[in-house]
Each structure stands twice: as structure tokens, then as C-alpha cells.
Length: 379
Image (cartoon, rainbow, N blue to C red):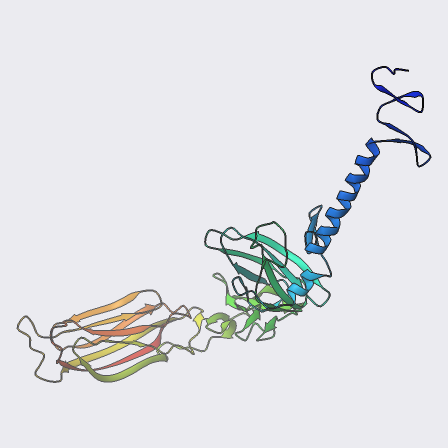
């Protein structure tokens, strides 16, 4: 018997080619063999990957990173590779403060920063170093605790962390609980100059530009607040370096309230600048300050008569605002000057300066003395 094309004779019957009969007691199609081979190959790939490290470490699943309990944790507990580094600054902060992390490795390398507070490693952030091999980021840290930071830089550029990558040094960070540090030096007292200190900043009590009123800074619930408080009738608001306050005016015209004096010698072109003592002088009210200035000088040796001209001396006096008196002496002179009114802002001291006029007489000696009286010149 002859079978038609596509069939062959088995046990006297024509059957379609590709079908095995009575194998394991049933008909079996060849295509299932390829399915079985494919499944076995897939199992082999996963087995090999699990033993050789393809799927160890950290995986990206829906943009969420997970750290295994295997080699990667042992790697993070190991010794730094030395080629990549991590720096955190500062290493001790209060919750909410900023820290700056700087990673250094090869250029265009992805680095992963991880933190451990005692409950396991967690990915904090990641970034790619620049052309100089540096990656820097500044962030707020709000969580209180003690932290260990390390970074892993993807040295083999396979876009994941593994034990072939570069491990940085360990950096520690302490984040302290933030408590109120608001302190009021004068206890909200308008009659005492004072200031509030909070978070490293100073808030000085101050007099308003109009009226006899003081802006009093104080602490309320740990927060800096301010109130405008009027002075009593007849009192004035005085501004000092320690703060503004209300006071009863006790100055009379002619009272000397500060100043300075000295005598000495100048050699060559050496000059001097003297600051006047105004530490106990208040600012404000309806009185004004002035200055009575006495200066004199003379040659101390015979080295001061140059061919071009003899040595001279220049005097300069300035209040808190600008220069108010200037004298250029080409020969020894005595000056008695009365300046009124002058400006005292409670901050910038008044100054008297003297400068030799020429530099080509290095052996010339000039003897000088001065007296400055700061006084109440009008009310």
C-alpha cells in the first residue's frame, strides 16, 4: 500500500508525518519538546544569575530600590576602596539644618549615597559626577538621630550597585533635636537697653525715628516678637550699642561725656588714628553732641628740612557720618577747634588721625599731642 504525500505507513496504516504513536501510551507532538527545552534554559539563566551575582545587590523595581541581605550588606560593612571618597559637612547639626555631601570619583560616574541609622541601609539619593569627577548636593535633614553614610560609585558602569564597584569612606552625622534658643537680655523692659538672641541672630531694642518710642524685642513661646512702647512724658528714647531704651534726660549743656588724649612721636611717614571713647553715650533725645579739639606738634630733630620742602602734618577728625574737620600744616601749628553739632549713631566711633605729608624724610621726628573733649553742645 502506498501513502499519499505527507503521510507514511506505520503498522499497515498511513499516518501524518511528525506524530509519534504509542509513545508513553499516548500521541505526542514534537513541538512540546521545544517548550521543555526553553523552560530548562530559562531556569538555568536564573540559577546562574543567582550564583554569579547578576541579580544580587540593589534592583530597580518601579523606581524603588531594595537592598538584599547578602553580598551588598557585607560590602557596605567592609573597607573603603580608596579611589572614591565621601565628605559631609558639617557632621553635627540640628534638625532642619542643611548639610552638603560631596562625592569624588571618576568623571561621569553614577554614585549612590546610602545611610544607616541602625535599622539597615537605605538609599538617600544618587547623582552623576561631573567632568572633574565631583558630585555635590546640599539638603535639609529633618530626622533626629545618629547616621552612618557611605556611597557606592558604579565603577563598572552597569547601572547598578555591586561588589565590583568603588566603596567610599564612612561619614558620621549627628542630628540633634532642635529646641528653642530664644533669649531676652533685658526681660522686655523698655527702661533698659537690651537685645534678643535667637538662632545665632541678634535683635537689638531700638528707638523709632519719630516720637519717644522704643521697639522692644522679646521672646514669646520661643519666638522672637517685638512691640512699640512709648516712653513716659518727659523721657526720651536713647539709642546705645546695647540697644534703645527710655530714660530721663540728665544731660546739661557743657557736660563732657567722652573723648581722648595722647602725646607721642611720629617717625618718617608713620601716622596714627585714635578712636574716641563714646561707650557710655546714648543716642537720641533733643540734645546734640559736639567736640572741642586741641592739637599741636613740632619737630623733634633736625632731619625734617628737606630740599623740596620741610615735613608737614595733616589732621583729620570724623564723626559717625563723615569728616568734619581737616587741617594741613606745612609747619608746626596749634589748633583749637569747636565743632557742634556732630553725629553719633551709637555704632561708628569718632576718630582723630594725623599723617606726615611727605615720605622722603624717613629720619624726621615729629612730636605731637592732642586733647578731644566730647560734650553736650546744645539741647
